[in-house]
Length: 337
Image (cartoon, rainbow, N blue to C red; front, side):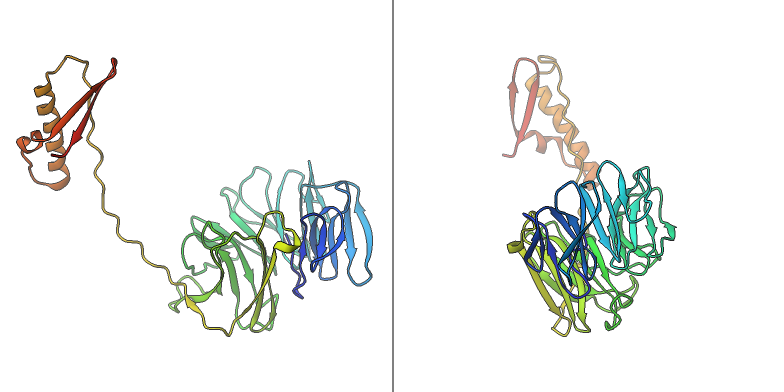
C-alpha cells in the first residue's frame, strides 16, 4: 500500500481513513493516488478520492474492495474481479504500485510476475516461479526474493546482510535525484527488524554497512521515501490495525555512523549419524540376552560405519537395558551405565 508520498506525508486506515494523523472519513484503505490525492472507500461499497489541497471528495467507482493499491495516478483493486485505472487482466493477482504508477501483478495461473510501466507498457517477468515479496520500483522495475536472494526484473543482483530478507523496497536516485546512491529497506527476520542500507552489487567488495531502523518490536505497513540527500523517512505501524496512535515515523539521517551488516558465515555443520534402527521382534522370539547381543552388534556396526573404527560388542553389552511391554509391541531403551 502506498501509505507515504514523496513529501513524506502518510496515511493510516485503522478505524477510518487518516491523513497525517487527521481523520478524513469513515471507511478504510487510505492510499496515495498521487502526492495530492488519497484513494480509499468511505462506505465499504465505493471507491472515493480525497483531494488534499481543496479538502473535497469525488466518487470514482460504486463497488467496494478487499485489496487496493495506488501510485502515480494509477490504481488497482480487487473484490471478486480486478478493476481500476486500467483494463487489468481479470484473473491476475494484484501486488502493488510504485509512486510513478509502475504496477506489478501475478499473471493468471498464480505464478510469475507481470509489470506495467507508468505508460501502460506490459513487461513479462518470470512466468514459472513464485516471486516472493515482489515490490514495484519507480521507473519500471521490480524487486523480489528468489531462493533467499534479492533479484530485480532489470537483472541486478543486490548484496545482502543475510538470506532472510522480506518485503524489500528500493529507494532510488531516479525517484529522488538528490540522493547520491540507491538504498534498500527490508525486514531481516521474523520479528520486525527493519534495516536500511545502500544498494551494492552482489560482487562489490565494499563492506555492507547501514542502519538498523527498528528492532525487537512488531512492525507492519512499512514504507519509505527520501526527504533530502541525507534523510530517508521510514513509516511503519506497531499494530496490524494501523490506527493513528500506532504509526511511527523515523527520519534516518544518512550521515549518522553506520553499523556493519556483513553476513556472518554459518559454522560448518557437523554430520549427525542416522539413528540406529531398532527392530522390534515378536515377543518371545528372542531371549533377553539374545536381544542385547543383537542390538549391541547393530550399534557396533553403526559405530564403525560412522567413526571408521571398531567398538567391541562387549562394551556395548555392558549397557543397561530396560524393556517395556504394552501387550502388542516391545520397546527397548538404551541407558548409559
